[in-house]
Image (cartoon, rainbow, N blue to C red; front, side, top):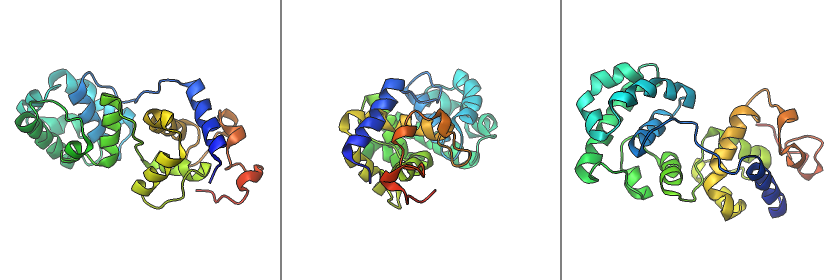
Length: 219
């Protein structure tokens, strides 16, 4: 594990470079953001934005989505992985929002996780983005960087989240996921790592010349 001082230095660099990191999902209201998050599971943000550009012009509320119908919805999102199941979840999510929440997005993790297609990671993303909460959403990028940086070697997303909530200073919690996801997506990739472009390269124990964790396994 890294020292608390070095962890703070890492996230201070992220903050200095990008004080207000944003999701790359394009949405025009709370409902469309939730739908985009649901669609992004096992799909890239870029591919989601391609299909939602047209979809959200005609269905940007639970009622409009319900009126659109599942067959038409599938036509819009068919290039997205698992589109059949995601379409079913979106239609049921829309129904639940109308019947239980007056078409509003609930603001607690428990309520969000009751919505079809919304798990803990997605709920954390939604709570941070829409309600200014301070949770850390854990996806494959976050897991990979957590191991490389020595923030967590836990085996499950929930355990990684628990480690990160302890290791990362609380003032960074609401932004940590976006920083790590962006860094993992464009710089510290699964392969073809671009250390020469890395803003935390001098602090990273993944580099073999760093004596802090010289034996850190490569993931």
